[in-house]
Length: 259
Image (cartoon, rainbow, N blue to C red; front, top):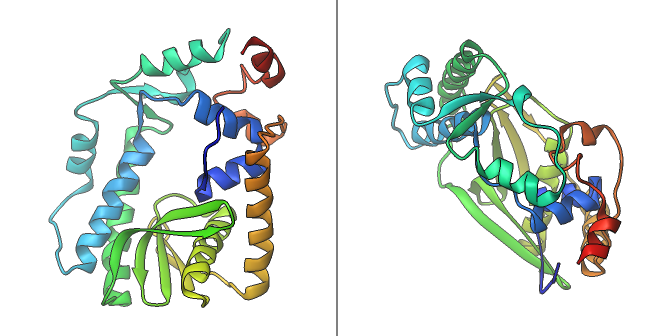
C-alpha cells in the first residue's frame, strides 16, 4: 500500500488503534456492495432531526418510512453472510455480489420501533434545545505535522460540537467527540463544548473535555500516524475479531510475500 499522505478520520484512527491489519485491509480490499438497515435508518433520523431544528416537521409514520427504506432492496440476514473465503479478493467479490441486498440484524418490527422512538425523541429534544446559528454535517479538519485529521460534525456552532447518535450508547462515543474536539482546538486554539444526543433513549450527554485529555489523545493520534507512515500493520487479536469481515483471511505476512 503506497502512502502518499496521512489522512486520519476518527474511524481510521480507532480502527488502526484496535487492529492495524484491519486498517490495511479496509484500504487495500474495501468491501462495497450491500447497504445496511441500521445505516439507512440512521441517515433518515439524522435528516429528520435536522428538519425539526430548522423549523420543519415532516408528517411521517414509522411504518411508511420503513417501507420506503426497504423498497429498493432484498432483505438479507446478517447471520447468513458467508464466512469462508480463500483470499481477500474472493471476500471482495462476494460482498460486491450483494449490491442489491440490505443487511438486517433485527426483525422488521424492531426497526420500525427504532424509527418510531427516534422520531418521537427527536421532536422532544429539538423543542428543548432550541438551537440557533448552526450548520449541519460540516467537514472540519486540521493538520498536525504530516497528519491531516478530519471529520464531519453533525451540528457545529460557535464553540460547540453536537453529534447525533441513532444506536445504543458506547464508551467509544466519547472518544469520537474528543477527536472532534481536538480538531476544533487545533483550528481555533480553544476547547469547544461537546455533546452527544442519543435519539433512541432521548438522552443528551455532555462530554468532559480538557487540555490534558486532548494532549493525551493527540499523542495517540500521532503514534497512529507514525505507524501508518512506517507501514506497520500487525494483526491484533481480540473480541473485535468476532465482528470483523476480514477475520477469515487475515494473514498479512502471507499477503506481503505474494506481492
